[in-house]
Length: 326
Image (cartoon, rainbow, N blue to C red; front, side, top):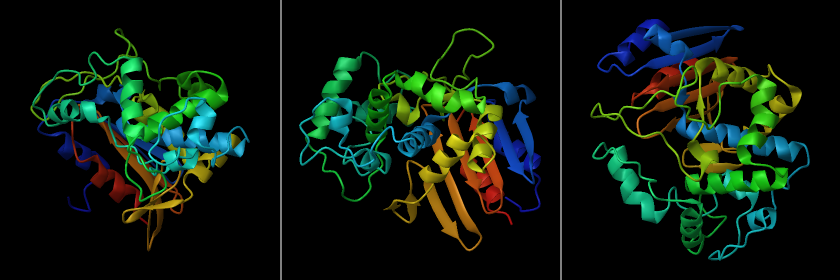
């Protein structure tokens, strides 16, 4: 993609080839620029997949800052629910940095999720799985999980972290997240709901074959089930750049502090962190069965990018190039 293309040109090019909506917001020089295809998508809600993890990691860091949780506490001590771990229960920090030893998804659902992700099926992979079924799957996974070893990406681990934060906060995870983080930032259109009527209907994702797919509804909401808008996510990235309530800004700063190597990059509390000669970029991307999302910030350059799509597109290239500019 030529460097001299405007943001609008890049978004138009990325949107070509699919009717699925695409929306983006960029922050630089103290101002935002927003664009969408079609234009009405600027106000749309999208599933953001694993970008949800940034909110869970930030909430965790905020609760650590406030003294509400001990990051080194074993998760079983916090939840009050004992699992038969292979070695020992992971700490909350090990959950937040993908060192729990848990897999990304339950083994019993792996094939179901794979065929939907590849576009071979449009059935909900989580159909028929209730909370008790999932708890049994988690117990099976825990028996093989050895905490504290090499980081291994795990939505199950972040889902369990959300359960622990809810237990420590004495309320449901969705309410805790709203009270501590979303409401203080004015993010009133971000949540786990999937309403059936306007104005907050969530964009229905479209897979690589152009077929509509189910919403993501699972039993690990802290790992990937939020839906949001460009405007709401710009509020979040502005807080990540220091413009927000003090408790939120401090929480994001802690969450973005590298704790563990994660391949060629670092990881803080769910935030992925990359350093180069121009400075540090903190980011995460996400995808559901059809939708895709990207959020990245470069504090040194005071730049941030949010991209949301109703189908699978290469959002990371545009977002990464934007925040990496001088």
